[in-house]
Length: 235
Image 1 (cartoon, rainbow, N blue to C red):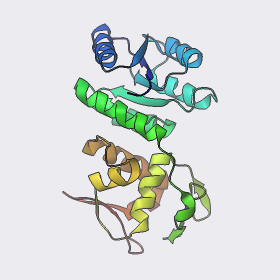
Image 2: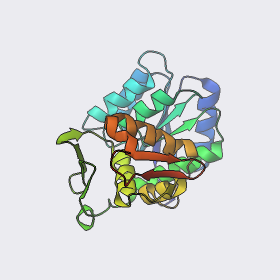
Image 3: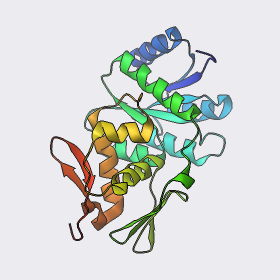
Image 4: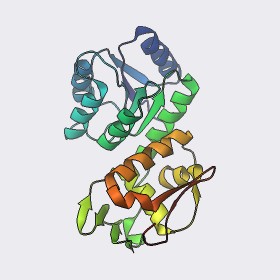
């Protein structure tokens, strides 16, 4: 590792905190820890870590509120966040991704999986953004998708999407009727080296459909394969 990255763990369960701390330290990271949301926000503002591992179930302010506060502050808004979630917290996962979290890992988790996710997120942060000038504006189904502005309008109404949601929508709409597998979606949006589960893509699609309202119907599930953006009006 060319430069030692700093990672802040915000986790109140001592055994999980110790497990993550051990594996990160062994992998060459500088590690900071906090056991409450308030401590996490304070440390992030003071130390400016490269990445935060954030448990959603915390005493005091919960992980979603922590993520919201961090992303709203100019000094911490750029810090990557990986959420630690329990099974069955899909609504919280969607909310966290909408707030700007980069990824999530579900408990119980493999330390190797967590380390892979961390490396992928840190790598993405070092990569230059895609050149929006090389991409075409898409107009389809009374929907305008403008990559240069990172903007989506439906019937002239602007729809606020996260960066990842926008990239998923742009990919699907760029080839209407074409079926993309979950791995094709992830590889296009985040790079070939991104370690992912099917659920990560599914959560993004759930958030997209909800935000698009009735136009969410154009994002179709192809059972056993993946997703496509319908090329039929009134789908």
